Length: 135
Image (cartoon, rainbow, N blue to C red; front, side, top):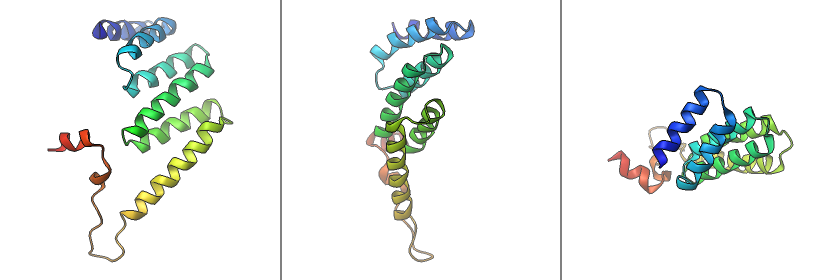
């Protein structure tokens, strides 16, 4: 069923039928609810339809998944998209500031205090499934 839904989505995008694309993504989200790409594309389709409220909600779901997976940079980029659509979105403003502070703190932890001393490997912060893929 998932492959058929994706094919329907891509066909709808090819035809610029954003309502059908959004509906296909809704079906896909029921199966692949941890795939941030689904919610990112759903937000894009909702934007094309002029439905900014649902677009922002979809992007927030994508941000949560990206953040939980350890992809803070991607989450930050999604917050920028949300704030472009809704500059006064309180959740995006506060959470993006918090995320940027956390990222800044992690970056400072990886800086060596003295030249020649190695800092901890950034891979230490990757989720477990990413570590398995590195082997």
